[in-house]
Image 1 (tube, rainbow, N blue to C red):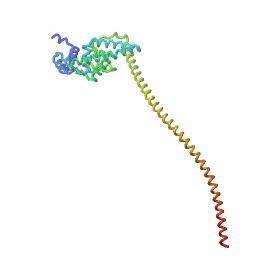
Image 2: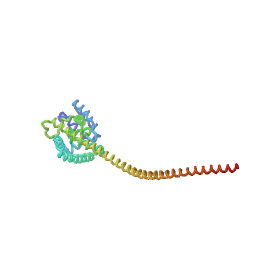
Image 3: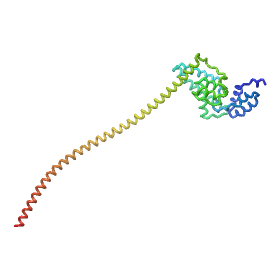
Image 4: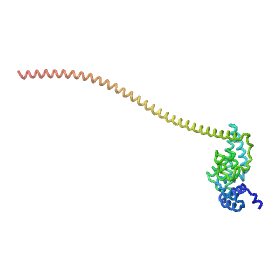
Length: 288
């Protein structure tokens, strides 16, 4: 009986979130009925059923403690490097982080399969995203270590979003963490600013690359158009030269015709005068 009197909400939540998701609701309700403490019973009844991705992370946090500890230690080093803006350390740690997260997500998926749960690609992605979130944020790391996640986490989520994803309070999660700096608020602000600067730089790089690629595509189109127009201009110049030659020949022929026309007009006048003289002569002969 004494064990029941000293049981805590965290203890009960840990028991329930260790169960397969399909057993959660019935076990939660039954556990709440067993409790004599009405307030604690109400807290237990309010526990939310975990989404499958959250359950997988909870399972991993309970059964792969050393691997999770390795990830959270690396997370502390990564946040420290971010706060100090150590580019070389960040590059190395980020490379380690990506490799470690992929390995841990694969282990979590295999662990879930051992417990009879088939994981879809989207669920596996959500597990990897949740583990990745723990690498960037101390609250997310504490939430993952709690084993009481009710939904997966996203990278960049604020403290309120992380707290809402956990059953119970983040304050009662026993997570060993590196010693906090003297000015923790300043360090957190500088880390957030560094993360924001990194995201902004990455976005600017992506935009610049897209703009460069678009300019290169436009340049290619313009080069092709210039080639086509140059070919057309060359053809038109040849045609113009040919037409100019034809115009010159036509003008020469026209001038020759003008000369011939003048000569023909003269001959017409001469013939008309001769015809008139012949007619006069004929008329004289008729009157004689």
